[in-house]
Image 1 (cartoon, rainbow, N blue to C red):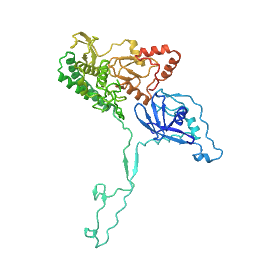
Image 2: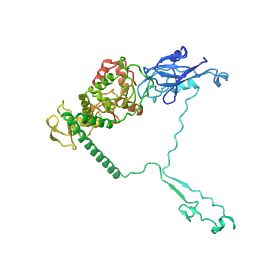
Image 3: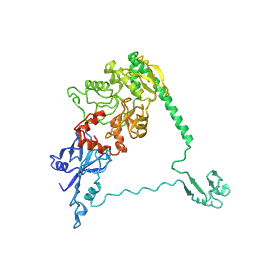
Image 4: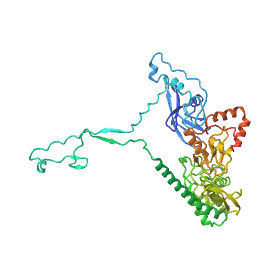
Length: 501
């Protein structure tokens, strides 16, 4: 094989060169095939004849190519030309997702956004020149533009006498903008073009619009909250028939949001369950058609999710990386009490995300109250019968108000639970009251930690300034304190954890 190197194409269409150890493995491959291991922990089968690499676990493929160097390019014919030596670089951490990339990677292999700090030097070494400079940004669009309308060309004069037009008394009248006889616009008149930029909005009109939207939101929250309160109360008092329970399950299934990610394609038919490796994988998902486990393992998967309260927004398909919702028909094989528990958790979690909801003060009670104002009310819980003073507002002393003002303590965007974040912890938090995942900096909410972290990596809000460096320094200098910090925030310490995965 001529001198050169192998490259692979990422999901954005960019070609990336394999690192030196991988090049050596590929060069020594037998029968044109070799197995390599990427920094993200995945194994890939490289097929030099088919020109592709395949993920051993997920069976996804990406194209590869061989780029020749030295003797095949036109620069090799120029006397005295020599390719610059590649700079000596160290592995670098992505400033967006913190993934540790190899020195030869120009872009982050996980998020695709982070750029190697030594990318310019690497490009100079490869191509003998600077990296392409970005195209200049276009000039700003003018606020108002005037166009001169060209004078229309007059139609040719009708033939004199005897022609087809001769019988109509000297030809047709001129056509103006408004039809027959409208005349022609003068060449010195101008046509005004409306500006395409933002227009001025009356603050009073904007305030009225926001007030209207807020009123509609409160009305919807009240209506949905009252309905879910009645359904939850019936479940807690065990006054729901089996048919009514299944109807409720189907209703909750329709209300749960659909997955925002693509459904992975199953490229292999399994002979054995991929969980227990004992029985036939006879449990085929209705929503996504995946079939990789047996019925017993599927039921166990659902039972564990219900037991751990990990069912928001819904129980997902057990196929790797699949976020499709499990169809209600699969719940028919569960015990009736487990279906009731699932519906109870779904309703209670939904009510906790309602801004009017206040939990009952009895810890073992899974009910509460809908309060529209900030006044204190003396109420009795309909589920447990406990009499209590209920208020939606939280009494705060001066110190808490000052910390809220400074941003040291912030409220959960859904339930207003007061939350404090440790220095050195990323901005994606899980509310201990309502269970919603939210971003400390943007206050945006989501259904899972994975979804929120990916969005934060894309918009650069995963870390507060300096906190990633603080965590990395703490991990290197004081592992015991680093482990305590993770445990204080409900994170289990994993010595094999790789950033960005």
